[in-house]
Image (cartoon, rainbow, N blue to C red):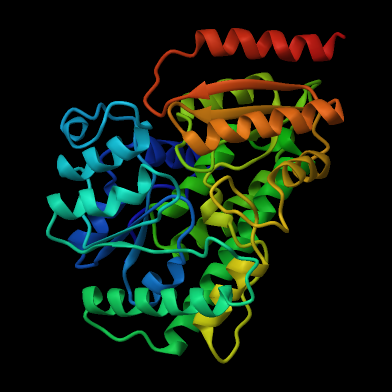
Amino acid sequence: MIVFPDWSNRPLDAALAECRDLVEDTTFPTVRRWREGGGKVAGHFQVYFPEEIVHAAGMLPFKVRGAPLEPTRADSHFGSYLCSILKTSLEAVLTGAVKMELFVSHPICDAARNLAAIWGRNFSHPCQILYLPQNPNSRHSVAYLRGEYDRMRRTVESVAERKIADDDLRRSIAVFNENRRLLRELYEIKRETPWLVSAEDAYSLVAAGGLIPREEHNELLRTLLPQIRARARKSEDRVRVVFEGGFCEQPPLDLVRVLGRMCYLVDDDFLIGLRYLTADVPAGKDPLRDLAESYVERSTYSPVQHDLRKPKEKMLLERVRGARAGAVIVAAAKMCEPGLDEQVAYSKALDLEGIPYFLVEFEENMTSFEGVELQVETFLENLLFA
């Protein structure tokens, strides 16, 4: 079932514009088309979820990442001092903008740990919590996570009304392995030749993966990435910048657009859950264990995973060096406790290394960017002309 034909057979710029429009469309047309065609949807909250399990059941894994909406109805379900993504995600479902047959959340912070219960009080579809290991350094973490994934498989089987065989999982893993390879290629373009793809277009190409079947996303990337590489564009004198702080709530696309006009965003953690696994998942005898082992052993970092082998400050410095960046934008969503905590730790690490950085807070439904634009522009000009 094709749910996003809009980009097909279009010139590159027109295809990229369709991707931007899709990402900003708060009616979620691709999810609606999937359900109108008889498909079922499993929504999963930030940050990481093993989408292969849902895909193997023939369902659409839908990345629940909030939206630039006014949470008129959802406000009454939450306290005041909470991040926006919790409220706008619920708002989208309360208003009927998006519908699903299953919702899965994760206890990534004090607010999100109650999300499944709040959803469960308001909707008839199952609302589950997936408990990723709090201590991935334990020698039992892979076995524990394999058990959690098996529990999730049984939940998905009940909703999809079909069994998920190991061969189904292996086929899905192959699809997602290709997707991860293509996303790594996109980020290679961002790092090596950032003038070939704008920040907003790169973001939209990634974000589309959470809204359409992965087979469609793979076809989209397979088609457009060679065209992006073939562009005849010249490099400009801009600062190479890493954006850190987009692991959960997402900055508005307009903010990404504004930043991309002033510098080259050569790496970031936007929607990091869609590319959390950094290498192919092996095709072994036990696909659930393979997925669990990949999460523990072959994954990136985020403020909501506590792995002593991956100190977040060290990982950020490696990201900066790998992208040959000259500065970092250390961002945090408003009222995001993990993000604001990490701003302090990241700032100290960058200070010790003498790497310039700019601190900023954002909200997904913010509409005014003049202040941020002026401050970032001043920061970058000081670097260029120092």
